[in-house]
Amino acid sequence: MRYRSLAFCAAIGAIVVAVPEAALALPTCAELATNSAYGLAGNPQVSAVTAALQPTVGTNTAYCRVDFTFSGESGPSAGYLPGQSQQLKVRVGLPLNGVDITSPTAAGAVPWNGNSRDLGGGGYAGAVGGVTSSTNRGYVGTSTDTGHSAPLGGSFALNPDGTLNVGLIEDFAADGIHEQHVWGVKLAETYYGAEPIFKYWMGCSTGGRQGHYQAQNFPQDFDGILAGANAYNWDRFITAELWPAVVMNQEVGAPIASAKLNAVASAAIAACDGEDGIVDGLIQEPRACTYSATSFVCTASGGPSSDPNCLTPPEASAVNKIWDGPRDASGNRAWYGLERGASFGGLAGTNPFSIANDHFKYWIHQNASFDWHTVTEASFFGDMLSSIAKFNDVIGTDDALKAFRKAGGKMITYHGLNDQLIPPRGTYHYYNRVLQGNYRETQTFYRFFPYPGNAHCGGGAGPQINAEALFSTLVNWVESGAEPDHVVASQTSPARTRKICMYPNVPVYNGSGSTDDQANFHCEARKKDDLIGELEIGKQFETSTKAMTDPSPD
Image 1 (tube, one colour):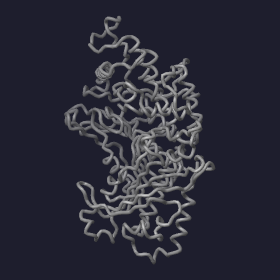
Image 2 (image 1 turned 180 degrees about the horizontal axis):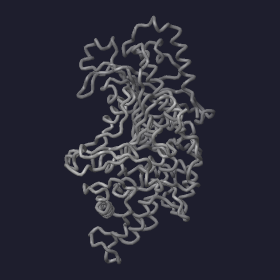
Image 3 (image 1 turned 30 degrees about the vertical axis):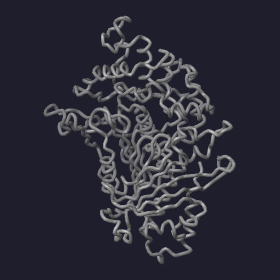
Image 4 (image 1 turned 45 degrees about the vertical axis):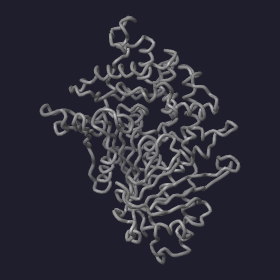
């Protein structure tokens, strides 16, 4: 991996030293782009610089927005094509300093709170995201496109000659997000005359993977990280996202009608809803649900179901394989499937999920003409192994958190248990690899909150994921030492609140009062996960166990 940013920061520091920082007045927002003393203007590695004070508009308060492109490396020696260079677009949002706050444009501005909050991306990224969710709260906010354009999908990874563009892959996996952090800190120090006191990361999906990457590779950079629906294990779960399309193609010969998939998902919820003693339209623990789609086979095919959207035997076989996830001919699990109750729409629709299709086409087979229909249930596992071999080191993001714990960092992770894109068992799997059986020590710095009924990053049924509320919980943990044993989630229809307990603890009804009121539940402490066996992966599909966090005190 190329950690070129540190050397570059040293170079920038040398530029600033030429004009002692103490002698520099705080700049206006516009001067960040025009005065070479501030590190952007005249920098040969920076282009397309703009810096402008953004007025208060609607719910977004006034702030200083800085946009630029960073090009730290180029050419074949860095993994790019000849003549090609790194093109990381970065945005830094700065709550107004003492100079700009007096501007007439600054009406409604929120002052800097002294901290920073970098923001993650989604999918293959490819676009600079907004930063106002951070600046509105007084944080310096940053975002990046990770070095490529969104319309390219996953094709950015493949050169015209069929070779992989290692430079662009590394920019997406690692270098882009590190640069956004480095520049956010640097510009904060320049604009305010002080470095942020507390530094945070916040992201979901790809942003969750990015947060874990930062903790694994730059453990000193962040005091707190909020990471949800994590896209770590990228080399495996992205491959497994094609499994539903493969099994429907092989078992049925075509996609299963959405009405049928919706009906069997509802049947699974109805069958397992009451397993926690409360009938509320939610499966509290989907891993414990063993409902089989054969119970939904039409009576005309010899099955028990008279539902108008019942399944044929081949359709039921496909649905069970989608729920179970990919297993080879010997029964070894390669990865996880959709949980019962999750929507099939994301991965088992009319067409395969585009990110998974692109991964097979451009990343695994390195062939822009590759047709996913040629993948069989048998050949799928060779593709999985190929993906692991090629991409685990660069984007698996399943390394240790030991250094992050030693650095004093805190992390909260969360996952909706009806996630229709990223199987939540991947988060259980990683968390259990980190803790190595010692929940107490791991929970001193890393806590996991599973949300029943929630879809990818939120939505779906049940009391909802509220990322900003989770972030406030993280801040209280980092800055005040308030350890979160549970968080409260809510929904409006029906009006309901529930305790979301820190894993592996579980919510238990107190026996009286409304089950729609979280106050009538308590979190029952558990010393282990009784369903840990559901996480086992075949050895050939598991990556080498790199040193995970040492759960014992130093």
